[in-house]
Image (cartoon, rainbow over all chains, first blue to last red; front, side, top):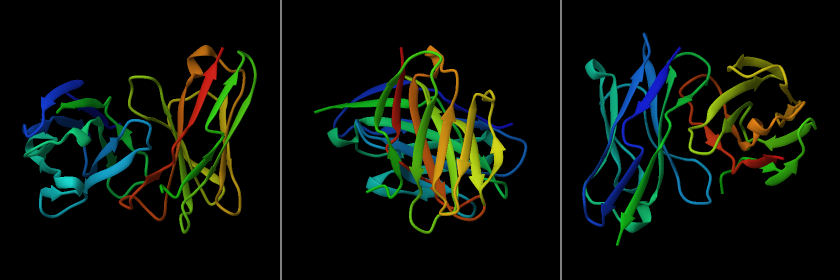
Length: 114
Length: 113
């Protein structure tokens, strides 16, 4: 069974600071990888996803993530955060070619201070 | 607009009672999955329905059951409620096999007292 580990549970940054949220997964085969965001009071939204191809994936709102297969990692980055990025971020994985049982990490709460 | 609609948005139940939560998938989607998100945790997979059958199940007891209707909408039933069942229940829909984007609803907040 797959598992996901998010290293930072609560991150506080000032506006314009750079962001990197760590995510590692455990699974013996090929996987699809996702980052979801949950803004306060809103539903989960997809930020970006990786299925295959270029390991550097660009998503919405200036976010990007890099899949490093040798490290089983899929870290989320943004060069300059804004106050509106305050939200909870979830890394998720599901096995390629299988059904959509998606396993989520515990989440990272990001607070951006103006 | 998420496209996935869930009802009710909030409800309070007493221990031992039963609850039914409902989900309408995004238009064009035929697969519905249910997740439980406890406070401070990521969503946990409960089960998935496709063609009106449970296709895959997570580590949840038999008290959790579901149904999918011919119009692809779905229900989640929880019997003999426990305090620990208090959580946000999320419905997600998608179409086809793995790799298609999954869309989440806003969730149903269940409080068991």
